[in-house]
Image 1 (cartoon, one colour):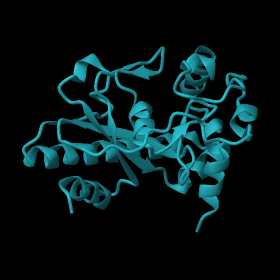
Image 2 (tube, helix red, strand yellow):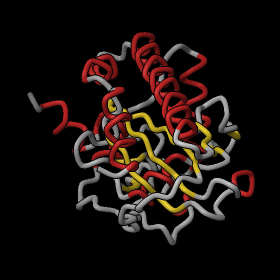
Image 3 (cartoon, one colour):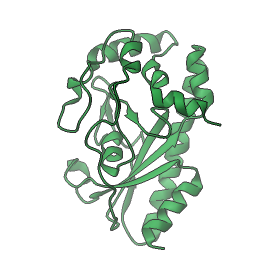
Length: 225
């Protein structure tokens, strides 16, 4: 097996659900010396979606943030593994990938690396969607100069005519336009309206993940044994 295969197996043995590889050269000026991206997808447990359906957001957020912390630890172990091979690497954890909370946008979006890796696409809701788990995932990444064979980028939505997330949005923030990588995020979602509602809900100890839980592929994931 190649070093890349060994790396992928190592990451999956840590518990990562899906691993992909992408050319991210030139996307973020802060990381010009690390042109290759490794996308990390960790599925959320089905229990998390049960919390959403029961509107038990205290337990949902505890579960969600717990999975983010787990993924961060896995990414750091992946960084160490790559460095031990003699390459440079940088685990793009939440604390390292500074986010503009008003725009809900990070320096190098995880979704960009994931779509370029071919692991999924952007749904109508602007959430990342996988065929296996729908939107019930958390994302991470590692940047490196390790030579990699890249996956086939997904550049167009693979959602069908399903409008579950759009119909579930309580503030009608989701536009009818399907995603493709030539569009701006504002073409598919009114992010300001979404952000204001989410923050109001969060301050009240609640949340809004209806677009995640109502995604048809999320629902199919929940039905699997």
